[in-house]
Structures are given as C-alpha cells and as structure tokens.
Image (cartoon, rainbow, N blue to C red; front, side, top):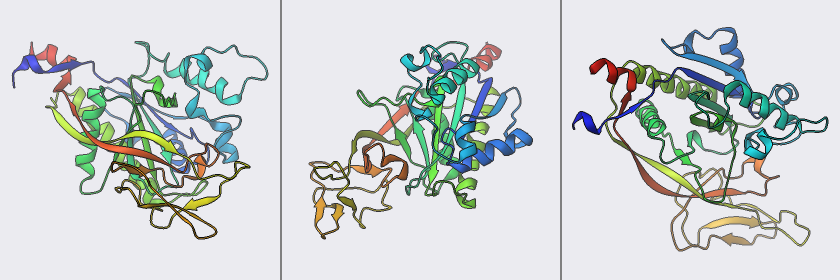
Length: 319
C-alpha cells in the first residue's frame, strides 16, 4: 500500500452528543444530563465534545415530541421557514440546533454528531449510517464493531432514493445514529444504557486515534440497507386489523423468506411474507411507528468498503 493511496481527511475538532431528540427515549437523556454535569469520560485531547439536550420540552413531559417529530424536520424547507407565532415547536428548535451546530452542509458545521436513541424493538446496539460514501464514518463503525465483538452491532444504512429522513444529526459533516433496544418508552434499563455508553466511548476513542495520526487501512463492513417500510394490514376504516406474528416478534436482523409469517389477525388468520428474495426486518413492532403506519422496515444485507484514511494534520507532519 503506497502513501498515494491514502485519503487525507481533516482532523475532528468539534463533536456533539445529542440526547432527548425524542423526549421519552431515556438512555440518551440520562447520559447527556450526566455528561453535562461530569463530562470527564467523554473528553478527548484536542477535541471539543459537547453533550446537548435537543428537545427539552419533550424531555420534561417525557413524550416523543411536542408538535412534530424533531428527527424529521432538518430539511431545507423547515430550516428556512419563517419564524411566526404558530410555527411548530420542533421546527423552531431545529432552526436553533442548526444555528448552534451547523449550518447544515457548510464548512462551519460540527464535524461529528452522535444522536442517541432508544427503540422498543429488539435491535440491540445499532449504528445508523446516512451515506454509503462516508469513509470516515464507515471506518469508525468498523472500529466500534471490532471493539464490541463478539457482541452483535448491526449497521443500518438509511440511504434511499425516496425515503428522506432529514435527521437531527444530519447537521454534522459526519452524522451517527445510535439506536439501542429493546427498551420501553419512558423507562430506563441499565443494560441498554451501558450498551449505548460503550458505543459512544469507542466512537470517541476512534476520533482520538484518528487525530493522533493513526492510519486506518481499507476496511469492509456488513450493513443492512433500507428497502421499504411495511404497514400493518388495515380494514376499510384504516384501522390496524392484524398484529405482528409471534414468530416475527423480536426477530430483528433475522432472515425473512417467502412464506414466513408476518401478521396474525384476531380470527387466527396468518398473513405471510410474499417476496422473491430474503430480507432482514428491523424496527419490528416499534411503538413510536404506529402513528407512522409502519410495522417494520425491510432491509437487504450488503457490504461496504471504506478507503484508507488518515488525518491531514498527521500527513503534514510526515511531509
């Protein structure tokens, strides 16, 4: 491997850790509040690490949001919306967050944001990737996955031609979603909090190593790429008429094949999956997604390779 094949990336100087994007997902809320009082464990040499409570009103009420989902409004229309009296609280808050940590898509934006979430689904400690071309973040995920091994740490790629998320973390140059479950809304579980805490620790360790000049050779990781969202079966009044089948419940990331059971009606009818390829469902029976008409997400498994990277500061030192 010659030095000419190494991609020089700017050092990471500003990192934010978001908690409370959804006010009833308590692991991130409690960790961020703790780190605001005592942040020694998240500090790294040469890096500003800022823990930040993103939706304080929703946190106070222990609800997902006040007016609308904060994790879906970081699009140009909402970020550029005129502030008037009846503007939704989360849109106004998104503009404030964009002002502090952005502007989104600019050179002034924060380098990296960890956005901490819980899910009621059996997803374990999941990392969410927004771009298949983000070599830095893929390298970080490779590092985190190795550090956590043999514990499973799936990566969900939400890059899609028509499904647009406009997430809170997308303000940063490198957005990282951390989704840990299963945990009920408004509840804290020690094992889930610990899993989230370890993911953040390993991510920050990677940042420090990168800034100190360690080179990261090409790596490949397995990811689950989102295909489509699947709704519950509904009746003529648009009401849910079947529930997740017991054989699918809690089987996030497990293969789903043609003929496997999906839903079960109260009359005992089994509704099966019809598809010509194996898919891997996740966010199965997520409580927050009933209102979004989503029973689970179908994904396909693929592999992503990141280029050989190093910090441009270390490259200058070498030259």
